[in-house]
Length: 210
Image (cartoon, rainbow, N blue to C red):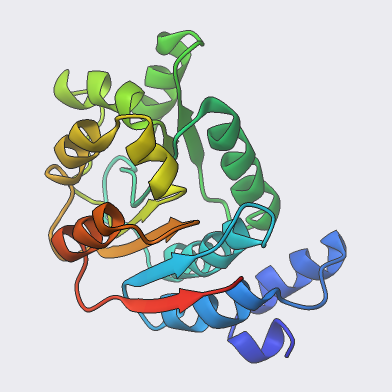
């Protein structure tokens, strides 16, 4: 199994080759074709299994193929994560894999000045990586608009629930279009995660790696 056989574009394959990635991990091999086909995906994967690339690569490919609507750029993909560290790490992955695709990435997290993050949103961006609590302020203040979101990712969903983010997640998801594609990644599939999947996803395909 190679990245070519997963259906990734030449631009992404070049970047992966430059980065030194040759073989997809199990979660990448299972999830990437499903995401490219437009399915909702419920992924069981621990940190360190390559799950960020499992959603970042097909997401970048889909956004780069689709021309955004005319007018100011609005976010078309939203990735919710539990911590500031993960927000930075995921955003860096998007920037690394997406070099040359001309897609903007904005991060929103606490413990840093709000204004530069708001300014980045106002200038226009394609992908937002955010902690749910920090996203609510600009969302409810009207600075962040999520009405053009095509793909929603809940990363490390079990940790977000453990940290008490469920009410914030629900408020965010209510602002995202219903006809979006939803990807949920979690180390465990407890009842609460399954309930979340039932509520937010449409016929999700389940992939799990040990």
